[in-house]
Amino acid sequence: MNAWFSLREAAATLPLAGRDVAVVHPAWHSCGTYRVVLGQIAAYRALGARVSPIAVSDLPGHAPQSAFMWRSFIEATPELSRQERWFGGVPFSSFVHPRFLRDVLWPYLHGDQAIIRAGLAERARLSPALERRRFDLVHCNHFFLMPVARRLARSQAPILLDSHDLQARQFVLMNERMPWLRPHVTYDEMLARELELMREADLLLHLNAEEHDEFRALLPEKTHALLYPSAPEAPLGPGGEDIVLVASNNSANVESVLWFLREVLGRAEGLRVKIVGNIDAGVKAREPALFEAYKSSFVGRVDDPGAVYANARLVLLPTISGHGLSIKAVEAMASGLPLVATRHAFRGMRADVAAFSNVVIADAAEDFARAASAAAARATIPSEAERAGSDTRRFYDANFSLRAYERNLAVLAPPLLGAAI
Image 1 (spheres, rainbow, N blue to C red):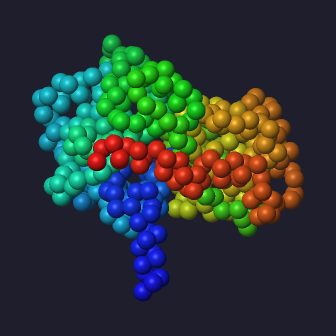
Image 2: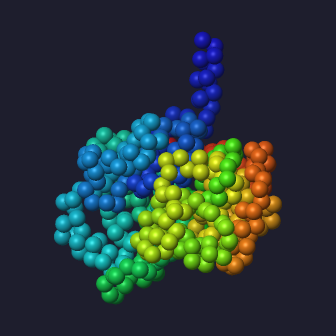
Image 3: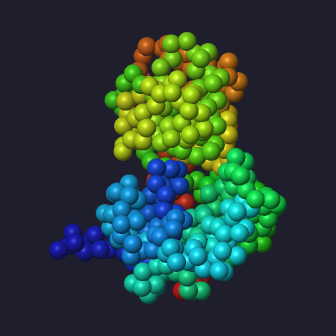
């Protein structure tokens, strides 16, 4: 009995004990955003909160009652099915409504990625049971889901918004190869919509240092915090012979992998690399012939990314494109393995990564090929102890581990709750 009371007392001392927190996130998986969301959920629960993850789809027909439409997402996200989870999305009927066609779809046909995403979130349906819930705090991921966050907050609960980079820049990258109608939407127009929705949050959280500084300048009237995300803790062994390159299918990663295949791999004599993740689909779509030439190197999506690092001896990060923090770079750092990387792979981190003993920085293709070949030629596989004590693993533990995220979130969230209740 005394032990049971001790457990209750310990739980009651947690900073968010008894609080109800909604975590609103895009219905994405196999990407950096999804791994960030998993870290948020774990941290809030560790701090004592009751957490309701709410996945909001940007695809047609994904209303919450459409179980068939959600099947593939549910199968790809088993971690979220262990406790309460919710869904939101737009029924097919909303896509043919005159106002949607005029106010959302028409600007989107001119390239307005900001308005289509926010417009879908504004029209997303939630289950009646979720609409009736009362939350103490709403944690929103991405500005375009603020319409859903506002509905759940009911003008009472404070909203924390994770910006996940300056999205207008990402939208410009996405638009580069799209056949939009003229006149094309401008960067400034999309940025204005992004900032407008961000102003409605009570606290703006930023995942990397560059983003934090830029948004402070763009929205000086708001309260900002640099909060590195929690990234999965990669296994430290047992190790193996694999040399790995891990990437999900987005435009920046596709550009980087194409550069690696075209400019680096041919110069790195004898280098055999496993390219892991659903990046294979993006490379195949962009450069079918190049994909066929290196098809044997692609592994595709794996269910357990941790196993990739557990059985590796070297990680390559040939990153030449992209904005915001690279979650795959953080995961590679967590593995404690030797890394050969471009400087751009570590964007947004306040650290001199080039000085880390297990990192080699190489920005030119010739230098990257030379460094990768030299690292691959080393026969020794780092031990678990060596990986645990590496500079990158220590940096991960101090900045990107779940414990670090919990510690920082415990400082930021409770003051908002005290002011709101």
